[in-house]
Amino acid sequence: MKMRKLVIIFILSAVGVGFSQESGSVYFNTQFLPNSEVATFKKNSVGFDFPIKNFSSKESISLIGEYQNLNIGYVDEDVPFETYQIDNFQTFSLGLLYNRILDNGWGFSLKVAPQISSNFDVEELGNEDIFVNGTLVFDKLNVENKSMWSFGVAYDAQNGLDIPIPVIAYTKRIDDQWAYKIGFPDSRLKWSFHENHNFEAFTTLDGFAGNINDEIDIYKEDYTGKLKNTYLVGGLGYNITFLKAFEFNAKAGYSAFNTMEVQDYDSDRIYDFDMKNGLYYNFGLKYNFNKKAKVKSPY
Image (cartoon, rainbow, N blue to C red):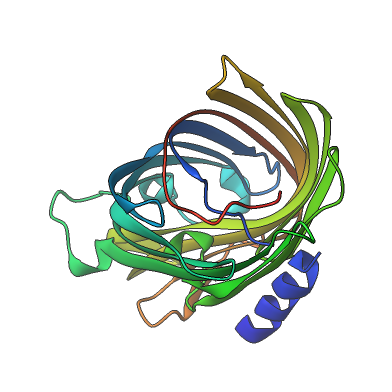
């Protein structure tokens, strides 16, 4: 069953991966996923990517961090147990990102970012509240062709999956107005109609994972485990750059795949919420600063 879900996700998303920024940033982001039959999600996050050391023009290390708050508004009549213990989760992450530019257009990024993600139903933290995420991606830039291949592997608990996922993308700059990237787990097509304005069509994989750090009563039986959510969305976004360093983006779309489960610590399903596909909204504001060593994407 889980393998079938992964195959579905891969097929639906195979029409890139988000490229690492060539500059540091501070950002705020809000997501809404309304679902009238089960639950409505509101996810707020604030984070930073701050270059702390440039060893040379070809090598840098950055401090990265994020705080995320997830609120889930359940429709009580559709969930056959009390949900007050799993309607709010908080996630804290802090890690390092290492970038290195190699010869002949090659470069790579290595990210390690431990995090705590929990409903904090009890004050004490346990081992199950801690997640360790990591990503390794290689880039190969073709300057003459204005294209780039990216490939690697990523393990991120916040996509709701238990296994590392492949990272592969092909990016192409067609002309001054059009560019695209095709791959997994994120794809985009961009039309820049002005120097500071563009529209993007996108598909992206996202989700959530948090520990339920106290027993929860489901069908009159106490369980311990985790809440995991995975969704694939596609849609259209608008991006604007202003005051040289600020970026605002607004996105709207629809989920093509949406699943949420309470699982035990062996990743076996305890309860499936039978999530339906629905609308997706995303708003974000970012401030860019401090250049760092990174193969520049043609996108």
